[in-house]
Length: 569
Ligand SMILES: [Zn+2]
Image 1 (cartoon, rainbow, N blue to C red):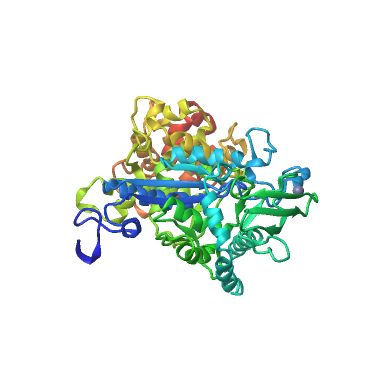
Image 2: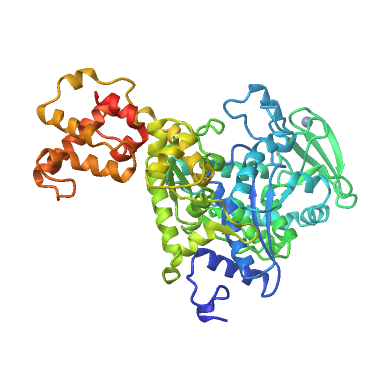
C-alpha cells in the first residue's frame, strides 16, 4: 500500500475528494472485488441542479474506479414507486385524486409521457447522457412488481419488532435546524417523506414495515388490520375508499416496504459500497441514520461508504427555465454551459461545500476561468488538484472527451457579438472571423456558439446592447469641436476591410492624432482623458449607452455601412 494508506492513483498524482471517496468504496467492497456505487431519486417533480449532486458524486467516484481498472457498477434507483404526495402549482386540481398512488401510476398531466414519473425522468436522462453519465437504471416499481424483494420483505416483517425497536429509539430525537429558507424547505420535505412513509395508520399494526397499495383505488392510504405470521396473509382497510382487502405477502406483490426499511434493504440487496446523501439525510432520526443501523442489524450488510453533499444555490436566472417552476434544471444549465463545464462545477469542489451557480454576468468569468484552466492543464508540469478536476470534467472512461469547440473563441467575445448583431450563427461566425478567430465553419465554434446565443437571449433588456436603428440627430448636431474632429479622423482612418487589429489601432489612435501624435506613440495623460471621452461618444452614437462591448469588436460586428451611417457620415 502506498504512503498514507492511499490505495489508488499513480504515484505523485494529486489527491482530491474523488480519490478519497474511491479509496473508501474499495475498502468497503474489499480489495479485488467489484464495486457498486449508487444514487437514487424520486421523480416527483423537476430534478433541479442541486439534485444533480446525487448523480454526479457517485459518477465521478465510478469514473475514478474505472480509471484504476476496477470493475464498477453505477446503480441508479428511480424511486418511482414512491407515493404522489401533492399537486404542485400549474397542475390541474383534479390530480389530487392521485395522491397516495405510486408516481409511476399517476398520469402525465402534460400528456407527453406514460406517467408522472416518466415525465420527470426523461429530461434528466437526456441531460445525463449529454453529461457523459452512464448508469445502470433501476425502476423500483418494476422491481417491486416483479416480486424481486419478496424474501427481503418477509424477512423484514419477521423482524418487525427489532425494526420498530430501532425506529422507536430514533423517533424521539429532535428535528434538525436549518440555516436558510431553502434548506428549511428541503428539510421539511425530507422529514415529511420520512414520516408519512412510516405511518401505517393507527392500532397494533401502525408501525408495520410493509404497506399494501389498496386493491380497489391503488392508494397507499391503507391501515394494516391483521397479519398472520403462519399464512403471511395481510388484511387492511383503505381510509380513502373504504375497501377491505387481504393480500398474501409471500405470493403477491401488492405493496412496498416503508421508506426507512426499504432503503437499507436495497443497500444489502444490491451490495452497495458507496452512496452519497444530502445534508438533510445526515440528521438524527433521518432515514439514512436509521438505515445505517437497520442494514447491519437486520439485513446483514454494512452501510455503504458515503460522502455528504451540501446545497447548490442558483443565481442570475432570467428567462431560463420555463418548464421547471423557475428553478433551473441540468438541461437548462446545458443551454448555457458546455457539458464539461457543468461537470467541472461539481467535481472541483468537495461535495460538502455548498456553491452557487450564477447564470448572470458571472457566466462570462466562469468561461474565462475554464479556458485558463484548460491552458494550464496542457502543461504537464502544472498538474495539480485543479487540473485533475479539469480532467475528470473533460472526459469519461467509456466515452472519451466530451464535446468542446474546435476553435475556442472566448465566451465574452461570442456573447458580445451575438448581443450586438442579434443575428444568426452565420453572421456571428463571419464577425468572429474578423476579430481574430479564423475558423472553417460555424461548426468549429460549436457547442459554444449556440450557448453564447442562448445566454445572450436570456439576459434582461437592461444588460443587452441595443444598437441604434437611426443616427442620433440631436447628439450629432451638438458635437463639440473635439468630438467633431475625432469623428472626422475616425471615419477617415477606418479601413475598408474591418479587421480587429486595425480597428483597435484606429479606435485608440484617433485621440492621439487629434493631439498631433502618431498611432504608435504612447498616450499622454491628455490623450488618455480624450480616449475616455471619445469612447463614450462612440457608445452614445452607436448603442445609446455610455458603455458596452469592447469598441473594436462592436465596430467590426456592426460593419462599415452601419458604423458610418450612425456616425453621421
Ligand atoms: Zn382504496
